[in-house]
Picture 1 (cartoon, rainbow, N blue to C red):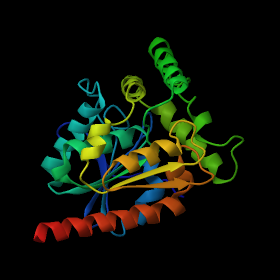
Picture 2 (picture 1 turned 90 degrees about the vertical axis):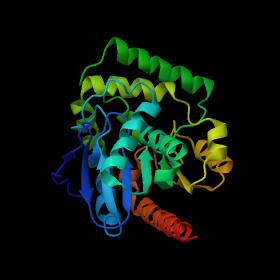
Picture 3 (picture 1 turned 135 degrees about the vertical axis):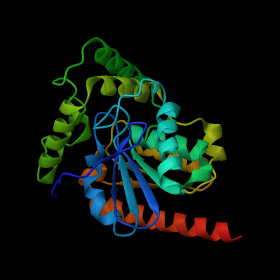
Length: 277
């Protein structure tokens, strides 16, 4: 993996993004504290068949802090406006962690713009113990946040002691987290921790193809969460990545990329067939 400097574009609203490849539009949204480079191991594979748009989430990377982003729907609205005004096409949207919550919210509320959705390492109905833990972390972040103490999540995201390429990936995540704009991190972390996944009624009504991918050993985005959401969603599927933790898109890209490519292809083919009916 070579992490190249990517040419970023910026929308009038302040959303920073990159554009790679040619073909139908595939949008990628990263998670809390990271930046669009978190998809580095997807760029080459996905851009062979699609126009890949990876965004810096509001308040992250080079995207502007948007104080109106006080819940998941507000983050979604920013991205939806950008898709409407600049992409002007139906998209397959994929998100990781908090990005998956935004992607699912987009599919639920903007289905006319969505050909399909891929939710990686998402969260759904945390246990009482998990809720207590995330609320405690929110309070800690509110009380004392510095560039040095935001890297704590990395210990939960990888198997320690890290080995092989995971050493590089864990170091990258530490760099991205320590460089994240603190106001944007604080804002997004609170939204993420206070969100417990889509309403069951919204999942029941989700009328686009939906793929839920998570990792067998992810302590917070449990396999049962993705399997339950897939079971509720009319066109839901789930896939569990074995021997992986939270950063599976980085660590297990060779397994995940073909699934994303195949799923997106089926979504766009189905979308074309429906447009001719």
